[in-house]
Amino acid sequence: MLENAPIFNVLNSFINVFRSVPFIILLVAIIPITRLIVGTSIGTAAAVVPLVFYAGPYIARLVENSLLEVDPGVIEAAESMGATPWQIVFKFIIPEALSSLILAFTIATIGLIGASAMAGAIGGGGLGDLAITYGYQRFDTQTMLITVGILIVMVQGLQSFGNITAKKIRRR
Image (cartoon, rainbow, N blue to C red; front, top):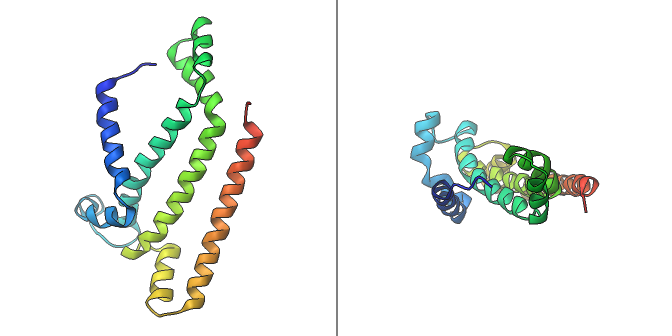
């Protein structure tokens, strides 16, 4: 619906390029862009820029996959009832894909937790910075284990919440 091949091809290429680069390399590779945007290449504000460059394409691909899962018969039925393209999107496609979208955003959030922990390498703050500064650099195994434990609890909690929420609203 409302396909725009030139825009799709440009965005698809952009998404594929940024998804191909591991986050830790992306973090360093876009330091000039980060400096241009926030004025520094270290700290919490500087960590946000590469996180956006990492998460945007990742989330876009997850959303695309969720929307492509919608049965074409649903769209045909909506068209046969005279629904406008916007009505088809908001009243048929999104409700049909909502469970899958919730799971996709759960995966994206967990990916962002991992990426934000890596942002500790540039002083991005948070658990990653704590683990690197106090655990790794000072050889404090207990700090590393506690940090890993907190990350595991966070990820498990988010995944469970996403699974339960998606199951409650699943239409099938």
